[in-house]
Length: 444
Image 1 (cartoon, rainbow, N blue to C red):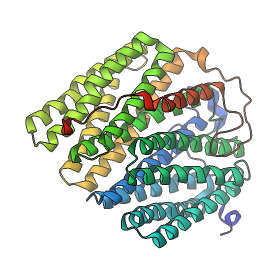
Image 2: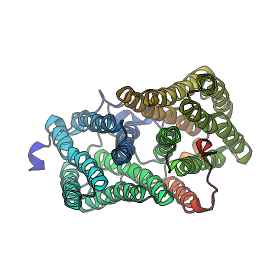
Image 3: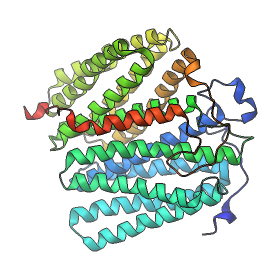
């Protein structure tokens, strides 16, 4: 397809991404809510949800889980939601072309999982060819659409890396090497957030009148908080369903949650110190992570009283305690009632997604999943905005306004803040093998 033919002049994303309009007023907006940062957050949300749903659907196909069809439908719905965002920048034809290419990825990954389950090597090769076609076509699309601000070679290489994370995570899972599978899952989750940075950076360079620079220290911080929060939600759903089903990989899904919790704790420690971050970790583990496990165990045992107790702890006790903690830590920058309500909305989405799955209402479960995933980005926006406002000196932008993009892994102007966050993430992942796995309560 001739991508230049379908590229239309920029229309602006004001109707699709809250806060977007013109970069001319960027200085009047909070540093975590500028036009460029909002564009980056929107792309982060959709692309990372794609990654989480792709791995989830492949696992369910392989496990012959009855929810597999609904998981695939959710993955397709995620792709459909990307079309208006791309169209708002490159026109309706550009949005349609983007989705047409992206559909190859969804079809290829679903077919690959089914082929591995069936032991059909020919079908596996056909699926891998379909995925490679996606990589090549999407790399060409991004290179042309951004007028080279996101070079085709760099985009293609990074897309191939993304596909490798998806495939490797699944292959390791299918082989029963669960520690390596969940380590790959975490690494792939981090990698996909580089796509939002690079694509939004290229678009802002291409259309500086519409979008401010998204890759500022404040933008990096919001993206990182969003990543940790979204990863938590995705892992919570994996862990709870694995626990409910008594799956062999439950301990490892639970272990991945431990890695996510430690990253959250370390992030807070970098801002508020060790004492406050340890207080958070105790609250998070005792009233949240462990209680989610209690809910899965109770549902599996059909213990309705225990289900109600766990649900109450999550949606009431924990929501109040965490909301109060965040309100206090940010010195009222996160209003108490609104923050409690936000945490409660998160917990309600977690409970609904799981209970609908347990009840066999898989379509409703994935609708709740997608709502809950989006809520994490609202929480990330609120928390990152409060922290940046509280410690503005830590997020001053000393980097050049615009730098050339180098691929989906980031831009050449990546700030020191993002480098520190990436280093922290890698250190946690490398230390993964030293952490003791929690044992499944269902297996005790």
